[in-house]
Length: 346
Image: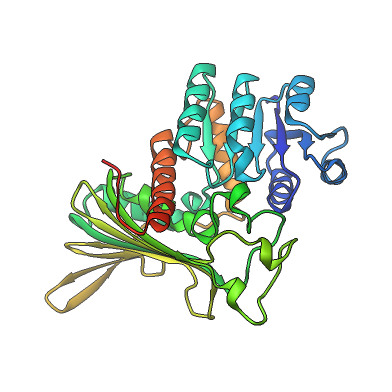
């Protein structure tokens, strides 16, 4: 089988992560790495196969290499323009989260993919979890009955993210909610079948610049921070259910720094074992689900799954409807927090 010519746009932490695990994917051949800081691109390219070429500009790489598969792991500010350029060049695209900076950008990305007839997915690795996949099958079969409420939370225990741009709103859309909590948010939105959101009410808070000795792991100064490190939101859906969302990069150590719960009329599903429990009166009965073995790496698994989609063997793990739905929720959360009131989506 001929290997798929693959390029990575972004040579930061996630670019290195994708390069590492793509080394385990025999169907893919990384032929190019892009980063505006050319030494970073050169270093990452040198860590790959012989002949991997470094570039400072994505357009130059697309013209010179003509990749079939492009992985976009640059700051979110550049996701839309780079994905659109990759589609126009004939490549299928995996974009890291968050999708982009606005719903309008996301819709332009979708239009470009459809025009080019290229496939798209987004780096939501939780979807590669066999446990979550088993819960999804259980929910699709009506195992919990009608869903009435979900809880989603995600963050770090006193660990502000590393890197050059997570702390900057102009580069990253937002902070903990857009960069970290988005993972369990997407997982639950996917598990529920992407219901239509009606309203969002949210608040955010920035603690790091108010701490006497803040944990700084990023490249920059506290004075440059313009994103939230805590956020909370309440969502109402058209099907009558609701969702609470909470993110915190500076939470105190706890047993579960991130997770989710889904409440139905027949019981509860959650991201810890047992994953499903049904109840009647005061009796709670765990349900044994058919869960496959966890993959060695969910990043590897998402590449294998997407390459299978490129070969026409399955659909991409993330649909445009789901990706744009999560983007609408994120943008509405920040709009509500800025306005100090409810945002109506439909």
